Length: 605
Ligand SMILES: Nc1ncnc2c1ncn2[C@@H]1O[C@H](COP(=O)(O)OP(=O)(O)OP(=O)(O)O)[C@@H](O)[C@H]1O
Ligand SMILES: [Mg+2]
Image (cartoon, rainbow, N blue to C red; front, side, top):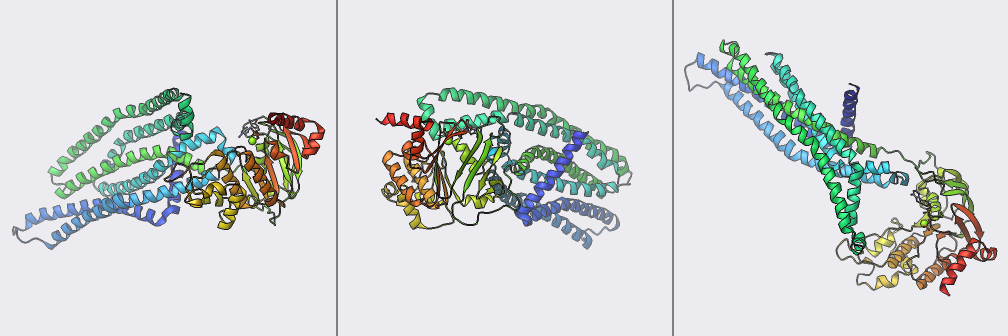
């Protein structure tokens, strides 16, 4: 019982939430949609009633007058009224509601929901994105909300229409006999029950197959993405991947069909019970009619509204069942939209006033990634003075990228604090902080737009083509860009027409140009030159020296030719700082840095 109660309260909650959301998207359209539904519900009943009056009038008139060619005016009016109601129903309901507003609203909802989904997804914290639980939730929502949320509203609209119709018929029929509508209503309960069961088992199949579905999509990506095709073809791993994919597909399909097959048996039973019952009711009324206690008009009215009632109930229960089915997908949609922020900004967050580079301090910082006990950083302390250039050095997995992610506040530190101009990063306004930061990550973005877009997306608010070309030159990208006929307007990547693919190093130079274009007071480069030839790298860092003379530069690199130029070098090993100093100081120390430097230098001898 409590489960049913829970279901009903959840349904009601979602009806309100979906209605509110739709209202926000297009209030006028939602109002007209529901209004035409109500008109569609009432008009057939009024029509049936007018028809009853007309029939009764005709019968009494044939008894009283024998003059056949003298048609009473009242009958003509009622007949006209009857056809007017018929017109009303077909124009407003079947015409406008079903075939126009419904589709219009559906399209509006799709766009409105899509925007909310994308907005939420793009603002999710990394901690969410890296949690399998949230990934499952995203999978549940990603390919379902576009279908199920608009369907949920459509079902609710249909139920609303059926309810209005049922209530009107109840009132009309109960003037004859209250039992008739009550019995019809009771008989429809099995149909409703089966529909609910189908909805629930379909969803549980879907939810249970979620990790499977994600694996299926992942393998599909591997087999269809141009980057992985190159590898899977040479390694000849495609057949193995195909087999894995087919196995997953078969098991998902099998599970999805089971509840459908079970429901198909009950599909026949319900209509039989309902038709038989209608027969019994009319049979039961016949003696009364034959005795003249019920007029011909009344009998016709009862039969036709009973049919209407039955069809409303069938449609209502079907819609209730569908509503329940869609509701199960509506829940995760709202769950995703309402995911709380992991990185919380204070209400009275503080800003760094000027555009000068701030002082950055890591104070005893320790960190473990969410859902992991491993201490990736352990008591890290160091400062970066305004305008200093700092290099982070260490073997793979030492924790360099992690430190940068913390500085961008993608995660909060587990222990200790990060201070920006002596303000805890947790108290900073993030938009303000990001306006001071320029970053280039190991896996930077290759925008499949033009060269110009690729650079100018570094600071979309500044629209300065001269500055853009200057940045391209400083990053060593201008030479190869100018070789294309379209120059900076050249489209990139093979995803769209007339796009040109670049080499790994060329993409990297373009990404550096993007960072240079932004000219942020603090620039973070996480291995930005790994794919760039030595000559170009030398030039880029020469340029960096001039562009970033008064700004802060934080770089991560495995190349000592790059690192040695930094004013301060921090050596990290296993999440701890083991050495700090300039290139010369660290060489003299003959510690880990000197050792790594010598190994690399030996390779060049
Ligand atoms: N998103 C994550 N979730 C959990 N652990 C992570 C995550 N990213 C990195 N790690 C772990 O944190 C440790 C440090 O990783 P990090 O990326 O900071 O290393 P790095 O010094 O940048 O290495 P590289 O030189 O290879 O880029 C690694 O042991 C890694 O396994
Ligand atoms: Mg890294």
